[in-house]
Image (tube, rainbow, N blue to C red; front, side, top):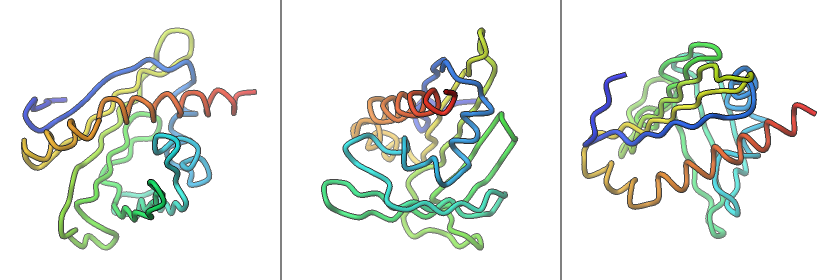
Length: 156
């Protein structure tokens, strides 16, 4: 994938859980509240219509405030790639102030694990810098750690 260092933030981690389980966690609404935002924040609602153009809507509670995040899936390659954005809502309605497109790439890692690459693609270098300063690396890193811990618990 061709990344632009001015607009794209990314990192890769190796997870100790199989990628089919990572895929399941990302695509089933019942799993999202267990990892999707860094604790102590939480997801209070999740609605997924898993198809290109289908909704990926979440509601977060951050410091007592509810935040709705509505988006759509742009690309889905089972067990390999998830792409979603808040640039549109269901029905391809443009969002008034889009923030980013998220790209998750999953691959096989030694020992049955997953190579997990997360990319946040922004419309401008200014938006990317805002996201970086908001704590992209720490926040998304915490989320993937929570995902791995949660998924490990599902393997028992």
